[in-house]
Image (cartoon, rainbow, N blue to C red; front, side):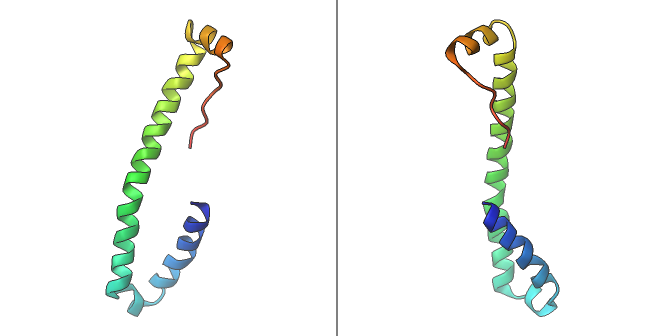
Length: 79
């Protein structure tokens, strides 16, 4: 994911710097495809982070913290 993001971060400013490319149909299709692929990823990331926050709260509160200590549950990291 990091490599793809870095590549797109370099590519998109280059495209915007060349008006003839920015209006090209294939470039528009690429941008629409990226946006369409990004939406479910963002939604899944938000869902995961919300679930991780609820889990973390549960394992820190009584009696969840007692169960978590015995079972070896650890804090979930946000994405």
